[in-house]
Figure 1 (tube, rainbow, N blue to C red):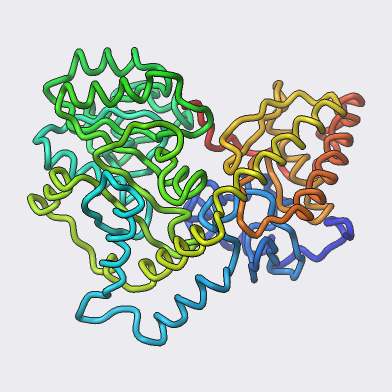
Figure 2: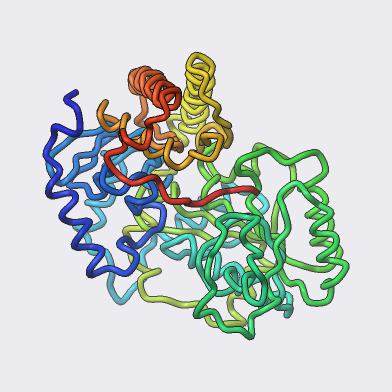
Amino acid sequence: MADFSMRKKSQSFAYQKKAKKCIPGMTQLLSKRPDQFSYGVWPGYYSKAEGVQIWDLDGNRYIDMSISGIGANVLGYADPDVDSAVRNAIAHGTSCTLNCPEEVELAELMCDLHSWADMARFARTGGEAMAIAVRIARAATGKDTVAFCGYHGWHDWYLAANLGTENALGEHLLPGLNPSGVPRGLAGTALPFRYNHLEDLEVIVDEHAETIGAIIMEPIRSEHPIPGFIEGVRALADRINAVLIFDEISAGFRLSAGGAHLVIHSVTPDVAVFSKALGNGYPVASIIGRDAVMEAAQQTFISSTYWTERIGPVAALATIHKFRKHNVAKHLVHVGELIQEGWREASGETGLDIAIGGIPPLSHFVFQGNKALTLKAYFVQLMLERGFLASNLFYAMYAHSHEHVDQYLNAVRESFTEISHALASNDIEKKLEGDPASAGFKRLT
């Protein structure tokens, strides 16, 4: 492909300038902001997406080997089977005075996939679904405090962890998450503990046993649970009568048709939350759980007009059916393993120091040293020149083929070689066309 610097890019960058003026923060999602990659290089906006291909506003075509719609498009962009089901739903009306039967079908299917679950509620985004789960847990237990580890969205219950502290969430995700606008009265209601550090949770439980209504965690993210950790969390939740909530928004429908917890350990939660991959890019989220807990939704007020529209459940049903039919999880794991091994080989061949992590379908690497963000931006730039949307993250899609992987890893080796040479000559900053990457989400748990 032609060098990206020789391509048209005026439309893409013009829209970024417009957005900075009329949208606070430039985008609706931090992870999609161009400065998370390299402002002045990353195209930012798209005109078309299909399979693993994306076209920017200037008509440049890329193979997406990066974040795959932040993990939402697990099958691939514009999947024909899911889109066909959605088009049929649109033709028959997406909302009206009555309820769509597909939400009942989806509730039954989600509970069939998770034999421990009895009931389901639905929303349209992961963050709001987590807020629903927390509300249900508090209603079921009559207790207000939440113990948690990992990332769980932007809502007040979560950011409350940073009220009255220097930076409680800094050790868990992203330093500097500002709780401005979160009521100060929520201080002390969200208490973080580290993944694979049961002793952290034990201290919290010893001090707050009477007030903890929920214990929330991702069952897996960057590392597998050590023996006894998840079992210990379950035992502590039972001891204090707290609702154990698994956040499966990222991990769900990657390692299995359903939650990752179905295959990585034998512990079952009281509630689990899904979104992202559930609808292959169409907005839908699911909160499933045991009936004794879920019935508490009737004791509080949880209700929204657009949770009743038809497209979300229809897309989810079509996604799940295709996921199961083609054993998509097996493909995602296989592709992710190839990518991680390719990174290791490229690192070894070029002498670049990187740390590789994540479950295979949600892989990442991190450049080591004090120039990490500059190296990331230069890598983004070099991969764009080779026709790839790529950063230090790779989220696998069913549409990713072996050919895509081979082409990508060849480009990675070439780019790592150029980065290594630039480091040796100490002129990497001069080679940047855009800005160094901003410090984005840094998952430590």
